[in-house]
Length: 372
Image (cartoon, rainbow, N blue to C red; front, side):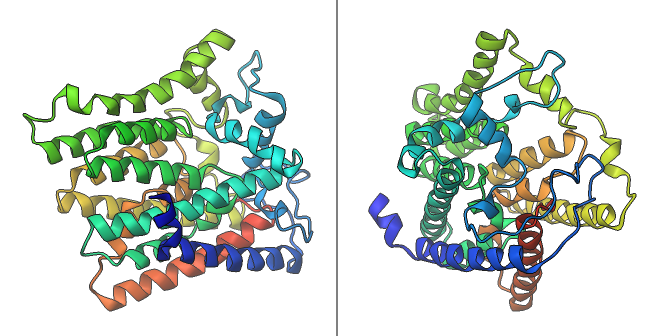
């Protein structure tokens, strides 16, 4: 299977994207002379100012990348007042970087970029295969193309977990469709060790299993491996309990990041043009994601609907729209939907809008502006 993934068109298209988008990103970083970002009041402008360099790996080290770097160097740390720490970042990404960094002389940035690129290429290949085999009404290459031009697609090769999580969630759904619930559970567990929303794969995959097997045949004996998904999240919370003595530490520290189950009023105060523009972009991503989610409800595709609705619901419930573009980007059913559109004008409008926004977000990200 692995060799087949490397040969398919999705892999090749993702490889071309990597070459093109990184050359453009590097030029954009060195072409623009920008003032520090003021989209959010919490951004310390003295720390996150634009700096120009011709190091192609460096343009992928932005924002949350630093927290993964902190885990890589110092391990997980907790403050007595539960203020912002690296506790909220799930462990699989930094765990994989530890042995990988040996091949890069211990350099975190090159190791992280390489790891994200590998999972991006695998995601492109698997999405192509997934669409071709399981969604005959969708153009498989177009589904990959729509992923690569999504407004926040640059994160797929940033030192972030997006491409890794996308691959694991795709693989979990793929093997569930193939009725191989052990591998679906294993990949779902890996997704759950990558980010908090990984556990949300459990319910849609169970629904998919019941849909495939029939209610009477979908016995626990057959689909029990899907419970491994919950185990992935449980292991991280158990780690918090054993090391720090608090099973619920993740949620306590998450509130310090402005994500608690109440409105974060600070994120809805528009004191600058940048903050208003940022809110309008986030609102657009939310609207787009909601329309796509309702589309699968209309089709009665309940596994996709549950997965997308729960992911978006959790993001919104944290009281802010911050990063909603990234959270929606990894919802792969969106690209399968787009690749099935019959209306030519709808397809071209999607491609035009998405490409323009991806260029905007790429330019912002490489120049230390908040994007997505």
